[in-house]
Structures are given as C-alpha cells and as structure tokens.
Length: 215
Image (cartoon, rainbow, N blue to C red):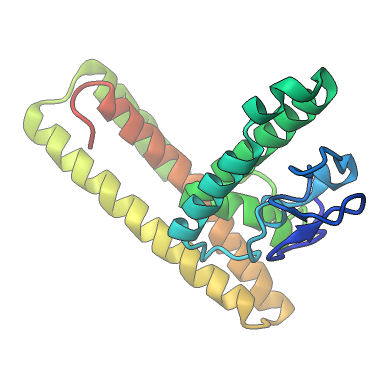
C-alpha cells in the first residue's frame, strides 16, 4: 500500500484550482485522480499516519466529506460524473472502516510501518494453548453457557481486549521513538500478536452477542 501523501489539510484541483474535500475527486468540477487510489487510508482522509487517531476528528471529516461528496449532488450532471462520485464515496467509506476500530486500524498501520515479512498473518504463531482455549470457549458458547458463566466470559472479553489495545498503543509509541532495528522488530511483533489475539476475542464477543443482549 502506498504511503503517498500521508497527511494533508487540504488538496487543490489541478484543473479548476478549487479546494478538494478528498484527493480522489474534485467536488467542484468533477475531475478525478485515479492514480491516488493507492494512497493509504490515512492519506485519503488527510490524517497523520498514526494509531492515535482522534475519533471526533474522524467523525467530523466523515460528515464533511459526506455532505460535499454525496452522489445525489451529481445525478443531474451526467452518468460519468455520478459514477466517479460513487467510486470516491465508496473508497472513503472503506478507509473510514479501516480506521474506526482500534484493532483494524492497528492492522492497517502495521502493514504500512513494518516490513512485509513482519506484517504477515500470525495465527499459526500464536501459542497452541491459546488456540485450544479459544476453540473450547467457542464450543462452550455454542452449547449454551449458564448465566453466571456468561457474565464471567463477557467480563473476561472486555478485559482482554482492553489489555490488547493498551499493548498496541505502547508498541506504536515505541515505533514513533526512532527505535533500533531490533526494537522496531519487537514492537511490530507485539502489535502483530495483539491484533491476532484480538480477532479471537472479538469472535467470542460476537458469539456471546448472538445469545443475548449486547455486551
């Protein structure tokens, strides 16, 4: 994934010089810039390439983009412009989805900050005991847990995800501090491990939600 234009406060259209709300499509004249589709989600949204995303700022940008880029504004200006607006809006929605959730955001940033071999999937590297524990927990949930045990598991899931999120924040802070090669590798490994574990605990949370009220 390209890190081109990691962050910027605004863009200008090369054709009409108007300020653009996002770099793929000019919401003034309709010119698109397909070569920028490989920009990172951070770059597309004009945010710093950092895990410490301000969710309020992210929401404000979403509202601003939705207001200025909504495809309905382009319905009367020809099929070609309408389709460009749809593609741009879809790309922005995908980028927003990658940055809202802290674990998905961590995985996205991991692929940008760490070497390819460091950012690969790690399910096979997780301890066998952890994987067996998760399998047994899923099976127990499918069979039906007593109310008291379900409350315990819900509390455990919240605690595990909070701990993993803290580990990710700490590891990214180390990456920001100009670490040595060994320190960078260790930080990337810690993020990768936490992201992989979070997927299992998120699956447990989803399974529990399927049996009753949300957590």
